[in-house]
Length: 340
Image 1 (cartoon, one colour):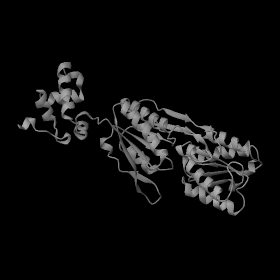
Image 2 (cartoon, one colour):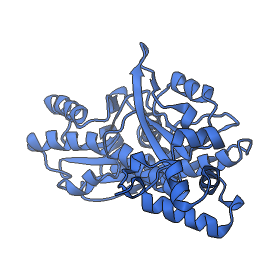
Image 3 (spheres, one colour):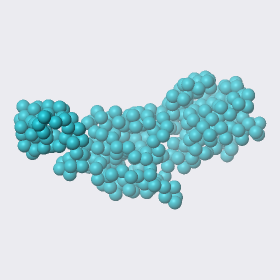
Image 4 (spheres, helix red, strand yellow):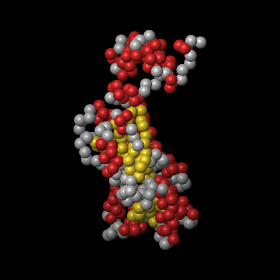
């Protein structure tokens, strides 16, 4: 077997290997990959055939140095665990693939003393960056801006001329959910149980809840809104405290997400409360959890995949035209009524 005939792994295939097998120069192969319009169609087709046969993968670093484009975009998330983040990633990845781009994912890796964080993204390799900011994080946004790459921010409204925004209209869905609870219960028996009070989504949902409930009562009491984290453990802990005080029976709860709602539902059932006869619950996000628990959980639908896709779409637009006018996309939320 000659050297030419020896099997080669994809990682071992070089530009020179492709050039030799296609009978062209290395420069021609490079042009086929980076500027195919400069190569005769028959030659380009022959080179592409060899690339497919050998399984050649262009070196992203070398390509970025040569063309100032890597066809890689980044997405920075506070976390990558849970359906909320995974659905956003699904939408972002699908839209990136549609544009022939690859998606590089990073969580917030280094916590600062004030609980703000930075990422470990290799900014120099990125054509653009989507940043999901759920809580005040000036350091993360400053780091992203200093990188010089085009930016689209998810969830947080950033009024900068060169930064696009994709937001959720949390208020509409939260208002619908509060009104739904008020259809069954007096306003002074309705509660909102959210995530961290500084979280942007929590703020908007709590504000809409207070506004709607406040229209039916003279004053919304401070204890009618509670803040913790987006976990079932927090929901169970809040519900257990209410049960101990004898205040959960006959109440209605708008939870900040479906996990909190599940924790409340579990604690209520353990205490012998029937859902929805003794306790009405509405969740948020309309995750798969909402439809598999019993009874099925009413929940506010958030178009998570559409959020990710819209962010990538805006980012692609800004990569092509860095000086384009700032755009803001706001996606609607809506109540899905089930059995709870």
